[in-house]
Image 1 (tube, rainbow over the protein chains, first blue to last red):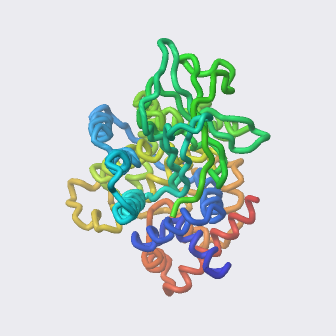
Image 2 (image 1 turned 180 degrees about the vertical axis):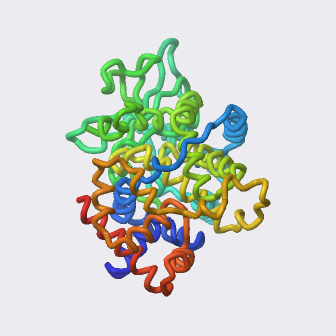
Amino acid sequence: MTPVMRHEQVADYVLGTLEPAQAEAFEAAMARDPSLAQEVAEGMRRLHALDDTAELLAADDALWLRIDRSIGQVERPGERRASALNAAWDSLRFWRWAGLGGLAASAALAAGLVALVLAPEPAPRFVAILVPADGSPAGAIVEVDADGGARLIPLQDIPVPEGRALEVWTLPSPQSGPVSVGLIEEARRADLAIGGLPAVGEDQLFEITLEPETGSPIGRPTGPVLFKGLTVQAL
Amino acid sequence: MQRRLDQTAGTGFDYADALRRCAKGERAALRLLYEQDAGAMLGVAARILRRRDLAEEAVQDTFVQVWRRAASFDPARGAGRAWLFTILRHRALNILRDGGREEATDADLLADEPDDAPDPEAVVVALDEASRLRRCLEGLEPQRRQGLVLAYTFGMSHGEVAATLRVPLGTAKSWIRRAFLQVRECMR
């Protein structure tokens, strides 16, 4: 994209004069290019006051009920993929257990796993495999999508004593220190709240610690680190 | 501070916090957003779509998307309220470009009297007098200002703006784009 085209497309997108197909293509470009997304967000912010010149209309409970009903059926980003991934891991364990898989089967399975990870959009951009310090099998995966969604996918049951919970942390930068991105009462798949943080990059630390059931009281990990790992870029 | 940046002046409503809670699956936070802004959103959608039923559809779709995408909201990148209305405007525009408005019957139209033709200057004077956006818009050539406002607030395409302003398509296009860039520069 030349600088002029870029400016024009930002203008067209912010003002809403792109055709739906063009707008979609532009959104894909934004997902790849944070500086473009930044430019668009800035433009949106500047013109946002125009929205408040519209007449205020009454929004009733019937409309809310329709919304409430439809979000009950909404699949959160990653839900479908996560279950497919779990199934793949189950079969991975099966192959390992059987010990007979051989190279071909593992290769096919690996290809299948990659396909599962990549097939439904948004594809994960980074993956971290969280392992315990003693080198025993991995406890969980963290997936981070190109669109900023992230989730924890446990790979094994993690014992949680009464009155405690699992807290997930990441380290966006050494200066910021660890930031809590999720609290779960047991090992289960969970969306991680990375929305307010700088975009996840390669070699970013994620870890799970054992904390009081309402989360660490000081906003920093206090309990033992159960699993940790660094992000790597997904294919 | 991100938090301060994300509170809309006057209301004190914390959009970043509500969106963070939506991302965690708290429906009560989405409901708060609804109470806070659904009325304003309906107004914005109705100005573009001119039909109450389609405006409601746009608002409904917007809240569903906000619920799904709350985790991807980046407070460092922009105010939460602008983000909500961006989703809304694009949803309304998609409904509009899909031809929703063509199927309107008279009864569905909110108010489409001849004297109710889109009036971009009325939009500009409805902006807060002290606002920078208003000053910057008022600094533009009238037709460029009108082109920008017609596109943004009434959801007009380049072609519709050209017809309204009675200029060739290419002229309308470059006026609108240039107006946008000028406003952006002016507000920096």
